[in-house]
View 1 (cartoon, helix red, strand yellow):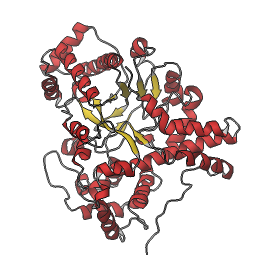
View 2 (view 1 turned 90 degrees about the horizontal axis):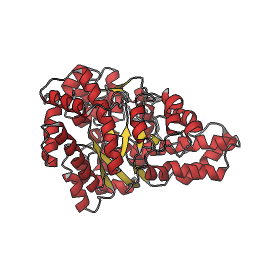
View 3 (view 1 turned 30 degrees about the horizontal axis):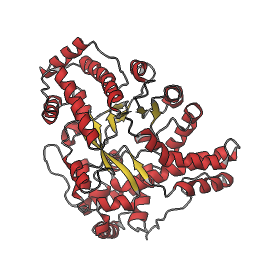
Length: 473
């Protein structure tokens, strides 16, 4: 017996009928607006190659750590889901077997945002009309396989299908940007742009730090054997990203410490790091110093600085060793912003040339720290609820806790933050519904006129991301 699968048009809208009616009106004004996707992880090569997606498992399951981590939490091995091993060891190669395992675990996603996104994808993109299960797995696999084999389901064609106006990839300082050049040659250079993520050359405890720094130097044409050359190479790479259309940088730090070091102390730390003399203390000090230093570079060249701290990366050592990073074992920690960012904001917080967007996975900071910071410093915008908080209730809490202090226009709009390309429209759809519901409540409580609520919804969905990431000369 099959269980039907369909999308209710009022999903995620308020339950109260009066508020829901207002939310419907607001949502109708934004549901079809173009998507601005300024914090993504779809590879540039995916767009440049424009090859057909291989199979349903590779499209919807294996690259999506939201999906794999839930199954792993119930005892499934990453290898069983086709996730590659760092040592090239055996993993499941049969995509149909991976798909079956996912369908058998469909019930595990009840109540999660992953369930919302997956349902949206299955129904809207693939025309699926029954829920995944052990019994329906093969039928659904065949249906999805047939759809992704069609010519109009290639990455570049999906940009139009998804109504994506602008999408950014996330690229390390060692990226040669050749794929972005190919996209420019194809006429897509202003639609698909790079974002620089320098983490691998900033965090001294990265296993490949020295090799990455030297590779960066080669690409920049700068000798990085000393600290001054290292900084010069970073500036050159930023120039290359700007030339390729980049608008932002992306920084993942464990803490928000932004304490600058004396120049000679920074040179000495860098020298010791190149000699292999790295300690946890020197790693933390250098990361904080570089956060401040990179803010200065951002002030000078206009790239928007995105900071998302507070995640203990690769928490399970064996999984990291076997399968590498981004496998679902990144766990949030409590995060402090007010003291940590003070050195940076003291120097750049009111500088008209600087712009920083702050993200968090610690929602206790919304009303206590982040909203007051964004409500005071003209350089700061609050990023959307991100990662573990990009859920219906997480988004509602963000609006409730941040808006009264920061307002709407000190936020930066929604970011989808995903490697799962097919989920991007579903993620934006959910955000727009939640914002419509929040605004509808303000209207119903006579705190905001309906016309202003509609205007604000359009701002949140489209205008604010464009403004927050706009190039400043």
